[in-house]
Image (cartoon, rainbow, N blue to C red; front, side):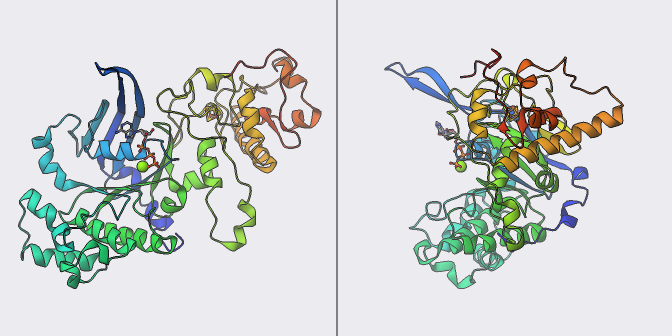
Length: 439
Ligand SMILES: Nc1ncnc2c1ncn2[C@@H]1O[C@H](COP(=O)(O)OP(=O)(O)OP(=O)(O)O)[C@@H](O)[C@H]1O
Ligand code: SF4
Ligand SMILES: [Mg+2]
C-alpha cells in the first residue's frame, strides 16, 4: 500500500464543507436467532447496533475493524441490499430506509457495491462483456454509442483491454477480476460506491494497483467511496476520514490525519500498532505492538458498558457499567471512550483498573503504556493550565488503591496516567477491597 496518491492537501480541501451524500442515524441490523418447530425468536445477532455517520460528496470514508465487527453488514444495509432493523438512511436528503424494491430501483444506479471476492462475485459462465453490461440490461439503459462500445470503454478505464470483451473470468488473475468488478460497479456512473474489502483477496503486490486505480477513478469521475477493510494498511492513504468499528458500533470517527497523529480510542491505537510501517527508517519506532486478548466477543450478547472493556488495558468500573457515547472531543474527531488516549480523561474519578484490564495490559508493551499515560496526562495538564483549575487529584481524593501504588507510579500520575505507570506497567489494586467485580 505504499504507492498511493492522496496527499494531505487533498484531505484538507475543506471536507467539512462538502455536501452530505449519505447520512446514517442510529442504524441497526439485528439478525434474529430462531429455535424449535415454531421458530420462535430466542435472540439476535446484533451485527450493527446503532451507528451514526455521514459520507460527504467526493470523499472516501474508510471503515475498519476486526473480523465480525459488522462492517460488511453495515455496507449491505447502507446500499439497501439488506433491510435495516432500526435507524435511518438518507441519500441526497431522501429517506431511503424503508423504500421497497420499486422505490429503490432508480437509486440502484447511484449506489453500487464492489465485493471482496473477485472469484466468487463474477459468474464463471458469463463473458466479461456480459458481466460488465449487466447493469445496463437490468436498468434498461442504452448508453450513447451502444452497450458494447461503452463496456469496452469501461474495460479500458480500469486498465484492461477492450479485446477482453468475449473472454471468461477464469482467464483472468485476481487483480484483473477485481478490475472487472470495478468496471461493472462503475457502468451506470454511480454517485456512491461501497467497496467491501476490495483488495483483501489479492496479492499484496497487486493491492496497491487496485487501490490506486480506485483513487484515480474517484478523481476522474467524482466518485464518493466507502471503503471497508479489516486493517488500516489498505485505507490509511486513500481515506479522507476513517470510522473504526468494534462489535457493531463506531468507536472512533476522525479525519485521517487526526486519527494517525493522535488516535483517541484504545482500540484504534491497537489497530494502528498492528499496521506495518513501510518506511524502514521508522520501522524501529513503531515496533511496539499492542496485542489484543482473544477474539471479538459474540455480537449475540455483547459486553455491558463499553463493548471493548473485556480487552481494553485501560478499562475501569465505569467502562463495565456505562456505555460511552460517540462524542466530538476535538473538531472532526468523534470518540466513544471514558479514558481516551491523547485527550483529557472523561472519567478521572474512576481510577481502579478492572482485573481484565490488568491482564490485557500485560500484553501491551511498557513503552505503549507509558506513552498512553504521558499523552493523556499532557492534554489534561494543558486543559488544567488553561482553566486555572485546582489540581484534579489531591491525595485526599485518591482512592486507596492509588495511594498505595509505588512512588514511581504516583509521580507519573495525571488523569488517565493514574491507571498505568511506566516502570511497573500496571497499577495493582488487589488488597484494598476496591477491586471491581468485573466478569
Ligand atoms: N445473514 C446473517 N445471519 C446471521 N448472522 C449474520 C449474518 N450476516 C452476518 N452475521 C453476523 O454478524 C456479525 C457481523 O458480520 P459481518 O460479516 O458484518 O462482519 P465483518 O466486520 O464484515 O467481518 P469480516 O471482516 O470477517 O468480513 C458476525 O457475527 C456474523 O456472523
Ligand atoms: S477505556 Fe473504557 S471506555 Fe475506553 S475503550 Fe477502554 S474500556 Fe472502553
Ligand atoms: Mg466483511
